[in-house]
Amino acid sequence: MTITASADGSALGNPGPAGWAWYIDDDTWAAGGWPHGTNNMGELRAVLELFRATAHVDDDLHILCDSQYVINTVTKWMPGWKRKGWRKGDGKPVMNLELIQEIDAAIVGRRYRFEWVKGHVGHELNEAADARARAAATAYQRGTTPDAGPGFPGAPAAPPATPATPAPAAAAPAATAPASPIAPPAASSSAPLAANPPASTPDTSATLF
Image 1 (tube, rainbow, N blue to C red):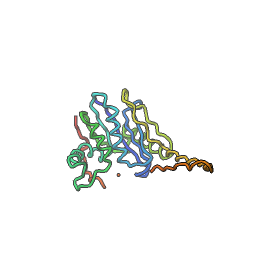
Image 2: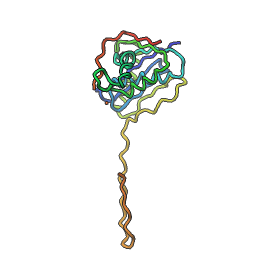
Image 3: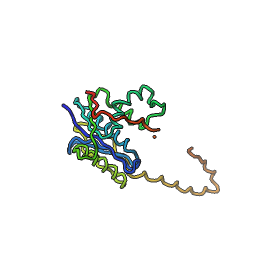
Image 4: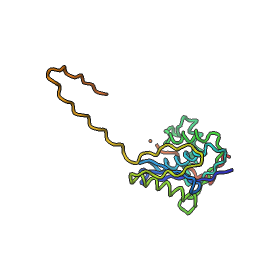
């Protein structure tokens, strides 16, 4: 059996509030994001989360993606970067390295194929993923928590979404009462993301079945 899914990312301002999403159908999709990120981060995270969500099934994965950067990263550039100690050909470090290394680990033993699709031209699955990624980015822009979606049947629970609002400020220290004149003084203490390589125009599909 082959699972066909679209993966997409969005960043408002790029960088700015960012979202990611993968979509199979209306009952099987997931989304998330960050208060601040890039479009490439969203595109990579969407693919990573799709691999993670389907890790427990022994099916081929057909990934529709409108990002040539992501397709080239996984199918062309990543093996060479890894051999060079995660450096590009010019010796500079690879950007988005943490996400790329997580994808590198997630694809071990998997059967998958990427297909490039043109974005924003009405492709049903791509439009659905794009809408959910953009909705997640918009939620972070508004300071709300995005809809994480139903996920994939039988998949382990996804990590909690990045909080949309900043953590509350630490409480001010309590005032210290003056010491009694006959008491000894109290002891005091104090507690001490280079450019990616230019993408050559990729094949419209990359097969690793």
